[in-house]
Image (cartoon, rainbow, N blue to C red; front, top):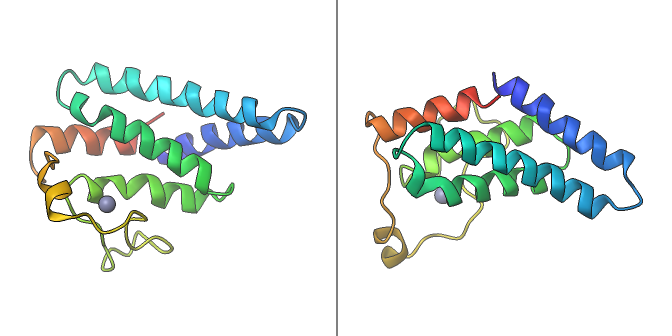
Length: 137
Ligand SMILES: [Zn+2]
């Protein structure tokens, strides 16, 4: 499932490589297109994840723009979302992650952290996001 996502993304990166004359526009268009698809999938989950839509698409954009074509790095970055949304920014004990062991952002201030409506494991919202993250196709 996640592999389909990676292959789909690599298709976009491949297009990027073929379009050396205007790589910025083509690459951004592909990511924009995927973000549009992500928003559509989030909306299909009803209201559960709408509060996280911007964060999810921003995270996706960040994953695409920093993976340097490395599928494994892309997957790890993408799946780190499932920790971040629970206000967990480090996952050193999770063997599914080889390269990425913590969020790339700076440590959140108490105020910044308290302003976020974090998800909790076991809630319908978190379940919906987990399904979404694994099943993105
Ligand atoms: Zn984080």
